[in-house]
Amino acid sequence: MAACQDDTVVAVPDEGERACARPLSYGHWEDGTLRAIGEARHVCLCMTKSEYESKSRIAELNEALLADCELDADQYDFDWNDCEQDFASNQWVGESGERITWPTTTGVVNPPGSTLVCR
Image 1: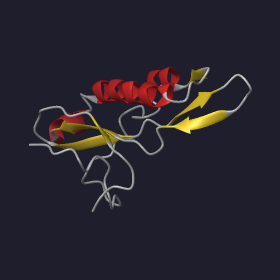
Image 2 (image 1 turned 45 degrees about the vertical axis):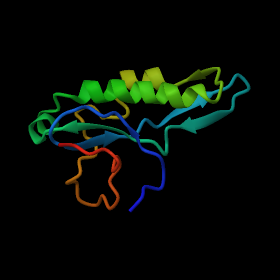
Image 3 (image 1 turned 90 degrees about the vertical axis):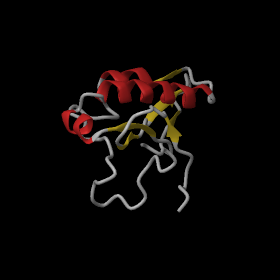
């Protein structure tokens, strides 16, 4: 089944499964208006089960999320955005990786990153 939105995929040649997170953030203009960015996007890395469980690659995924957030924000000409702040606070991945979607998570009908094929 096709995804409802475009997945942003960071392909890392590795064994494992897709580990994904969403770079949801906000962009702001000087007049006080804001716009959500990244809400329909996912960034995924291939991780082994041990990497996922040990949370050893959270920083790498978080950095990829920052790059994707900035990429999405660039198209709107914001005066500023919250990408850097959300990156620094681990907003997208969670303090201990609890916001990272792993394909075996129950309740995930159409997992993000379905276009990423891990070995």
